[in-house]
Image 1 (tube, one colour):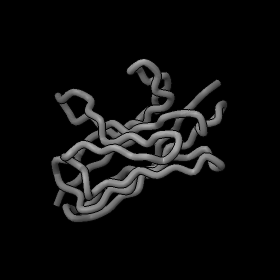
Image 2 (cartoon, rainbow, N blue to C red):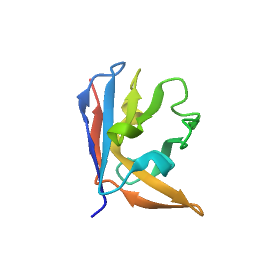
Image 3 (cartoon, rainbow, N blue to C red):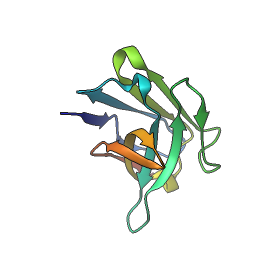
Image 4 (cartoon, rainbow, N blue to C red):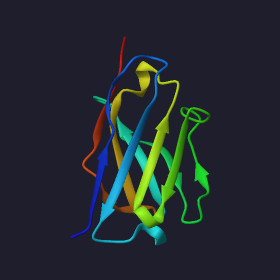
Length: 117
């Protein structure tokens, strides 16, 4: 059974940092494009960033310069380092794996990030 589990969420003050992890099991991530998404209450899920098999990353303007995605295929793990967090970053964060024809094959269950003073 293929599974992806996020962890590392929590509550942090504005300007703070968090590091999210996404660990895969039942499969090897080395051949996958991986990504992070987030969904705030009453809003649509939106992309936070993508990391290709070779390590190339892409970010939307909303997080560029503040968030960094990395991966370690040997550990079957992807990370999202989030710095300079803002209240608008409050959301449930999801990892996604195996992008094919514009569709992600696997999703994690999500981890809550709350940025508040």
